[in-house]
Each structure stands twice: as C-alpha cells, then as structure tokens.
Image: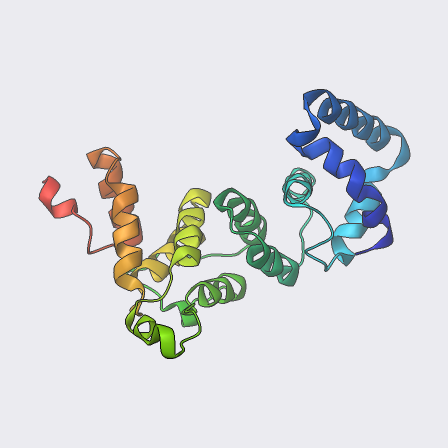
Length: 225
C-alpha cells in the first residue's frame, strides 16, 4: 500500500461504508469535498492511482468509492490491479464497477459475425479475466470423494462475470459475454442454464435482444415467435 493511500484508507472507509451510518458518511464526504477544493487532494489521489498495486489497500466499499472517483475524474487504474480486485471479491456489483474501469478506454471495432474464443479475445484484460473465470475449480479428489471427479466444475465465477459483463453493456463487454457463454468447456451446460434462468423473467422482446447480442443459440427465442 502506498503511504498516502494508507493514510487515506480510514477516511475513505468512513465516507463509503454504510456501516458507519449516514451521518458519518455525509460528514466525511463533506470534509472530502472541502479538502478537494482547498488542498489539492484530487491531485494526490491521481498520483496514488498511478502507483497503487495492492488490492488489499482498501475495503470493498473503499474500492467502489475509489473506482467511482477515478471515473468521475477521468483517471485510469492499472490492469493488473483491476485483475487482482476481480479475484479478491465475488460481488457482481463490485465486478461491474471494476469492468467499467477496465474497459472505459478500450478501442473496439464494430461488432462482427461469429463469436470469439475466450483465449483469442483481442482485449488483453478481458481475455485474462475470462480465462481465470473458466478455470475448472474442483475440490481435491481423495479416496473418500472420488465420485466428485465426475461432477462438472463450479461455474459461480463465470456466472458472476457473465452478469457483470452484461450489466456494463458496452459493445466490447457484450462480445466478451458472448465469448464466455458460447465457449465449449465442461461447465458450459451449467452456465447456459444459469443464463436461461436470468433471461426467463424478462419480457419477450428483451430476451430476444439479449439472445441476439450474445449470439446465444440455446435460448428459447425461437419458441417466442
């Protein structure tokens, strides 16, 4: 953790964590606004944003605040840090904020026909994020649980990433979501079933739109016609 961010961590926590109560959040937010006007705090935070590498420097609430501050001030954060933040927390809401930060400045061409393979996705950060999510997480297999070797891999990480990519809803994240859900791997049936469960409550037109954007051939789009 950098020295300045270490000193600021408690202050940011009191601004951002609702556990302190609304009155404390508002008090520290007011104090921060005052400091930003008079003491160049924004400049210090910009400097810290270029140097911070430790995903443990702030709590989840603190990082959400810091990432939103970075967006409001047009500040880019390092890709490795954002990958570590994705690994550290499983919250879809947190992932949305992180992915937004990672893809905000990405150059992306018009959408093409067909689906990328995750390992060949042109954006380095999203490619690495997807490959981490697709790693087959299985418990250690021993004599007492040998049957677990036949179980499909866990897909919770891929499920969270899929929803977060959809919620960011940029062309680049739509293409990444399509690559993720259409990729052939041991967890694909479970991931496809998960997506269907999320599409089902939507109205027909919204389901069709998402099926088209994701090029999701396993959807029930055809039965709605």
